[in-house]
Image 1 (cartoon, helix red, strand yellow):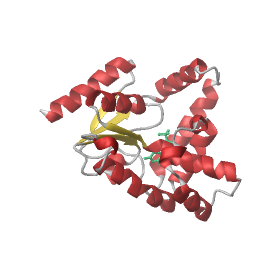
Image 2: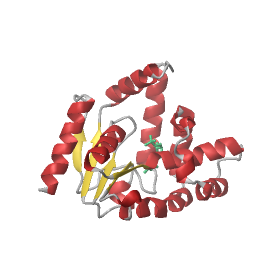
Image 3: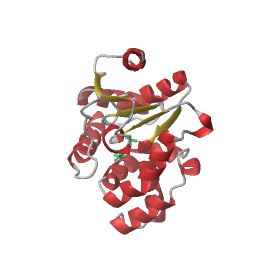
Image 4: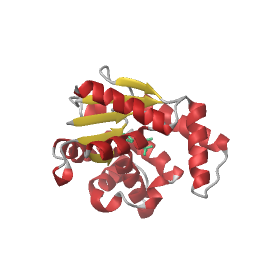
Length: 211
Ligand code: DC
């Protein structure tokens, strides 16, 4: 069974996806971390972020080793990941791993939960359940600012707002695999929900679909 979860940055999709996977005993893949891993490889190699270098970095990503790096969470890495995500050659290099993970989840799990921007539309168009998780920009800024504060990395709301806005606009406007709600995805707006209520709403949609 495959559950596809898409949505803009800081919408709550990652937390919902991780919790659903834990509860169902499914494998979980944060596909944004793959794009971030490409960005981090490029930043560390100091190569220009052009198509050829980006494709090379994408082909070199080793998920088992690369996805645990705490530096993946930096906003600069997220910004570059979004720019690289607009490159068809980068997306192509990451596609097979994502599809394999979904169809043959590791450790013999009975299913997989993948979250990202194009899971329901491109990576797993035949997913059993698709959710599109969103929230207002104001609320997403508030969440990201308090998340960073909790990690001891205080940030200006205005800076976070500009970063999120630019990233979402780019992710939605690109010609390859843009961020959009699949026609058969449930829309879950978490603006007025805390994380427990958002998770409960997602779980109810999944349960309704499974019965
Ligand atoms: O989910 P995230 O914020 O970690 O993703 C970082 C960037 O990676 C996002 O702004 C766009 C890109 N991305 C993508 O293009 N496709 C995905 N499936 C996941 C992420």
